Image (cartoon, rainbow, N blue to C red):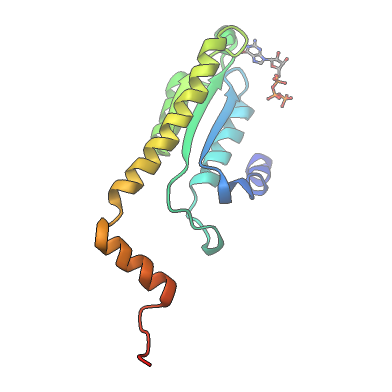
Length: 146
Ligand SMILES: Nc1nc2c(ncn2[C@@H]2O[C@H](COP(=O)(O)OP(=O)(O)OP(=O)(O)O)[C@@H](O)[C@H]2O)c(=O)[nH]1
C-alpha cells in the first residue's frame, strides 16, 4: 500500500509530457515489482481533464537482474502478464551482464513511441477536412457574418 501512495505522487509532471516510460524492477525483489505495477497503473489510469494526451504513452516494463534468477521472486510470466494487461512491452535482462540488451531496450522504446505517433497520423482526417478543422479551431465554428 505505501508503494501505491508513493507511485500516486510520482510521475505527476512526466504524465503531461513524456511520450514513453521504461519501468524497471528487480526480479529478485518482489516489492520493486509491486512498485512497478503501481507506476504502470498510474500511467494508464484514465486521464484527468488537465492532462489530456492525444497519443498513448509507450511503456516498456523491464525485469532487471536476470543473472540473479536463482533468487528470483518474480516470475517471467507475472511480468509478461502485467505488461500484456496494460498495453506495455516486456523484457527481462541483466544490466550488469548485457549492455547490448540495455541499448536495445532504449531503441525499442523509441521505436514504440514513433509507431504511436505514426498511428495517430494515419487516424487524422486527411487533406481539406483537416484544414477545415484547423480553420474552425482558430476562428471558431459559428462566426457571425459582418
Ligand atoms: N546482480 C545484478 N546487480 C545489478 C544489476 N543491475 C544493477 N545491479 C545492482 O543493483 C544495485 C542498484 O543499482 P542502481 O544502478 O543504483 O539502481 P537504482 O535503481 O538506482 O537503485 P537504487 O539506488 O537502490 O534505487 C547496485 O548495487 C547495482 O550494482 C544486474 O543486472 N544484476
